Length: 335
Image (cartoon, one colour):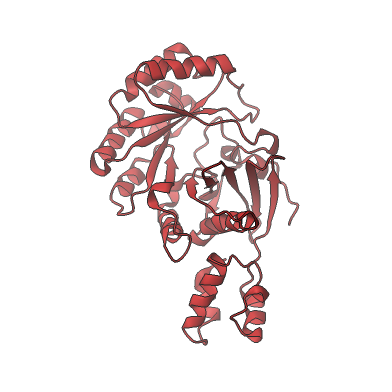
């Protein structure tokens, strides 16, 4: 769904036709041009032929509707994933920024796919649009967007930021900048660029280890951008933007969930404007899940030492909701 192509399809039409088309896509959430009453019949037929609105995908959802995962089938044969997480007060869409990933984090299913290609800005926006359509019958909309799916956003920086500007635009989804987050495994040049952006979106750091040697074992990116350098850059970002940073920490049994690890994490983050988001490991075959008591003790240690903690609940295990699991299984059924 390339909107430069839409402009070309409409280049011989009056200028207002493009505005009508954009409104139909993003406000009316039409999935077929025949639904757009303001357009003439001949033009609707042309658009359905040359710029179809269908998003080729397969949906997987929990029976209670709290988590919905989409496997989106791109025209070049690649599959990407997006996830909708529904809460009482918000609907958050987690989008992918790349097909595959080159970071090779040992706990991540996407890393096993390897890097395929960057997504275009429109392919990123399309993921939000898909779930906006999904929520429409429920008289709800997307309230939050997080770039935490497949891929490393900072390695596709330009397309990611351009996509988020579209998502933020009052003429499109109008999602506030403070309800948009970008997660990086620690690409320092990308963090530096983000600190210069006028749009005050949130920064999240995929940390997952409290010290360098363990982080290098889990996340090879630490060899290129060591933890000390990463934290130094994060502190510069905080000083410049005066925004809290979220530190994502995936708890893996016997690997990074010990008392020593929790105390090392306290030392690392003491005095840093941010909070820790504890994430239960979504089993991908490499490691084991931390038990409930260990998670509680880890969290208590952080909180007792003044570190703010949130905890992500393990939604979606039965639909392979961890990034890359469905794509790795090469699901090819279509909807």
